[in-house]
Image (cartoon, rainbow, N blue to C red):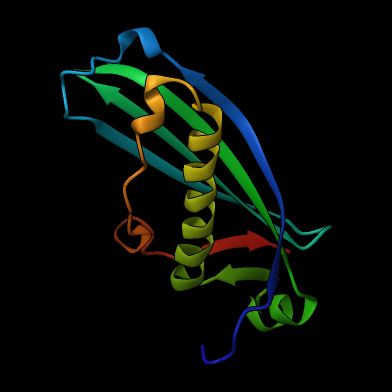
Length: 141
């Protein structure tokens, strides 16, 4: 696919945010990051939703959990370009870009919501979604 997919970032929604600061141990440097990614498409609005859940734990105990959904309005001409057999097929490279944008938003949510806590020192490390997203997302039209 040589043509660019046109879209607009229209909404960010923090669906879940929980901290367990009392479980955070300053003297233990190792943190474990678990990331899950999901996609959905609302055909009536031409909106692709990407939802990412990040769970941060230390010594098998959750210290922070966040779920953020980002919504992207896909241009009508791009939907037409991506459509085949009454389905819209979003290619993996595009999904990686969308997930990366949402992941950056999560980094900001974590920073903003942990100001003046010891969890504010946690910075979500870079994550390459190309290792996780290797198939197209197909939605009914």
